[in-house]
Image 1 (cartoon, rainbow, N blue to C red):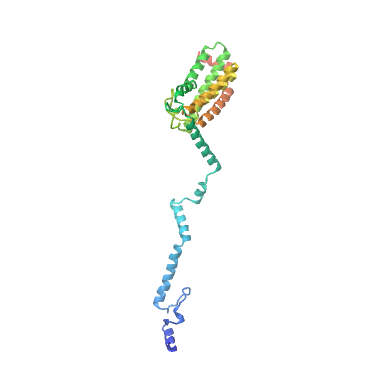
Image 2: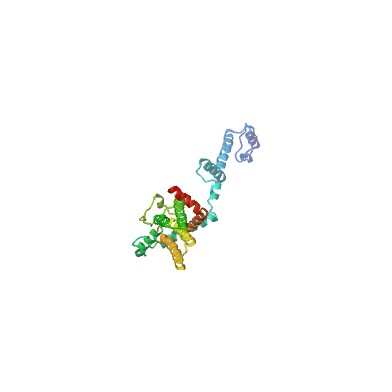
Length: 283
């Protein structure tokens, strides 16, 4: 057992005595300058070690990672993560688009000769030509020229104006929307133009709806003929899907747009006086 003198000597020279209670120096209390060099070195290294441990802690790593990622653009901001949550409108539109694509592909039974209804493809193409713009423009112009009454010329002139309006509006919408035609479509259509490579809306559907409504409103037709007009309008629109030319939504929107065009023609209707003025200018 060490003598008291040895203990006091150890205290006087500043070094702790092994086996005594003074071996454990608190790291939280600063040592004075008279502390031994090995304790001062240990104490000086402890704050550095503490800082390194604090910098390596999970919370600081997450904080520094998020700030660095946000600054460098590598990590998505929190608000971008919130924007990734789909809204109800987005889900509904995506579901409708998926249904439209699936239904259009299932109904395109005359898209090619090898399809399930490939034998009916010539008949569908004949119906396609009946709704084309060129036959209707030529027929309206010829009927206006051959008509003997001013009323007949007035009706055919407004029909011609409606057909020209249809070409302009449908071409403008197709150029803006630029929706591609179905992948299974064969580009063997009659008299196409550059804008006809787009699908939305169906020009045949708009023309059929407008002309059908126009004929029912301004021509005196018997009941069987009125039924045939309605049947022709439906067949023209349905043939666009059967041939794989358009999606279902293209045809439905085309019917609605054609009806709106008819209403616009009624608003812009040319009177007999205007017709006589135009004919005078042409003469």
